Amino acid sequence: MSHKPDLFEPLTLKSVTLPNRVVISPMCQYSAEEGLANDWHFAHLAQFALGGAGAVILEATAVAPEGRITHGDLGLWNDAQIVPLRRIADFLASHGSVPAIQIGHAGRKGSAQRPWRGNLSLTGADAAYGDRPWQTVSASPVPVSQDWHVPSELTEEQLEVLCTAFSETTRRALAAGFQMVELHAAHGYLLHQFLSPLSNFRTDRFGGSLENRMRFPIAVGRAMRDAWPSERPLLARISCVDGMDGGWTIEDSLVFARALKEVGFDLIDCSSGGIAGAATAARLPRELGFQVEMAEAIRNGADMPTMAVGLIIDPQMAEAIIRDGKADLVAIGREALHNPFWPRHAAQALTEGRRDYTDWPDQYGWWLSRREAVLEKIGRG
Ligand SMILES: Cc1cc2nc3c(=O)[nH]c(=O)nc-3n(C[C@H](O)[C@H](O)[C@H](O)COP(=O)(O)O)c2cc1C
Image (cartoon, rainbow, N blue to C red; front, top):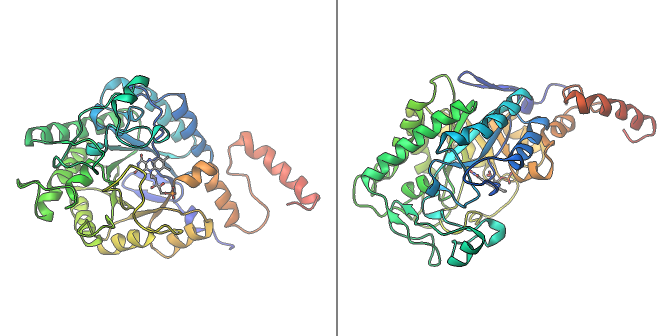
């Protein structure tokens, strides 16, 4: 390939330009205390900016303490939590990645064990190491499954308080230096619990018809839009399908995406599943790029930019997704844990000729370009 790969063309959303189309997908580290980011988060996220990502989206960050999945989740429900996030956002931006943060509320999937502690609901036994169970909330008082906590049904008053929490968290994200905020409306967490007929059994104006089930998530979206500068982009991650009988469908997603567009959202991050089972439970059969067609369906059907995610590991596949207009951005999650420099390696893989290190941080690139010459000489270039 002689021309610049499409994957490495910039993308402008409102006033923000991503230098390329590779985004690091939000990934909970379950490693915060009282919602505060620490050195783990800094090191984990910083490497992705060094690795050349166009944007880095910080993990699901709770708008309220009870909105966490686990005690280790990041939070942005108070001003003290802005400080360590600011350091991370500033570093990302200073190394060329657009800093972004996902905000959300776990609803009935909260009060959970960290994955490596069991990945189920917290019990009294978890309190022994400090992770006490808490009362969860949801659209309806129905648990994820039999052995999960029974959430309490949110009242209209509580929904208003939550809208304010989303709005205040959005303002704090601005103060922390983020250039994009992503609303987490996927994976069976609170907003998805309102959207899906498999978890919302309300008989008031927040349940029943699709329009009613969308009412609270849309109100949250509006609250965020009002709190966020009009020239900065807002993203929403949705589960495009529940993948279960009687569940949320791609047609529902099109209606929701159009409604979010109307509110002033700029891009839909297209994931799927999660309405039943643990945070990490899979519903759809897994194959490379298994959710790309959903990103394409939303992009065409809602006339809105999308991000594709899910087992995208080959540079050629990522390039084809952008080149063929299936999505505007690709997100990588676990592949970035495997290789934080995936974007830079992808750029090399998609470009003919000697491996080029000129765009790399000087601290690495200067050495590696010289090593490349040596490798060539010994036939290993
Ligand atoms: C450790 C880990 C934590 C995750 N945390 C989040 C999260 O905070 N928010 C979210 O929307 N998705 C989360 N996900 C899902 C990823 O963002 C991504 O959508 C998923 O892993 C599929 O992409 P991949 O195949 O490139 O990993 C997480 C995934 C992993 C592996």
